[in-house]
Length: 199
Image 1: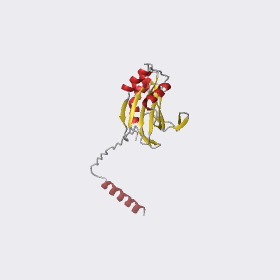
Image 2: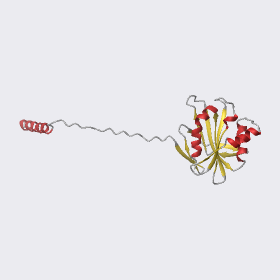
Image 3: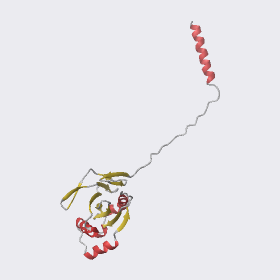
Image 4: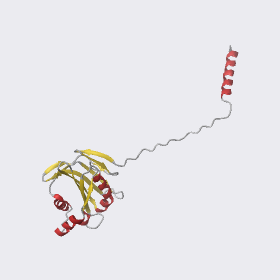
């Protein structure tokens, strides 16, 4: 019996060796590398408004804003820090109010927030030549104002960028970025992309 088992084992081994004979097959494997598509900007939505958040900005939890003694929920609030100094941080807010005051009234309000007091002639010159118009992704009209000319010419001076966008429901969306003059200069393009993404 033992010899029969031994014979079978030898036969099986021989069959395996015969099956594995011949030249060794060289197999080439192609490495498939998948790179995730980078999505640096994220779309957000609130109060019937859609926007695209620029890369590197952080969105804060829901906050409120006050105007004329009335508290109104902010549509969104963001922060962004300087790459060189984490303590150098700017804040961006989106708030919608009923149409009122016009650009001249808005400018006066923003200048008070910056503790700036230019002459009437300086304010009028700014309104006549420094306001830039734009159109959002949703087709709304808007106006940019860079208030850096009203603050000291130094990177740490507190400045402001604004975008006012006329909405279809007789409201104005106010986008406002406040922070150091140096950081706002670096983030101005991102701020404009945010405003123009509104729909």
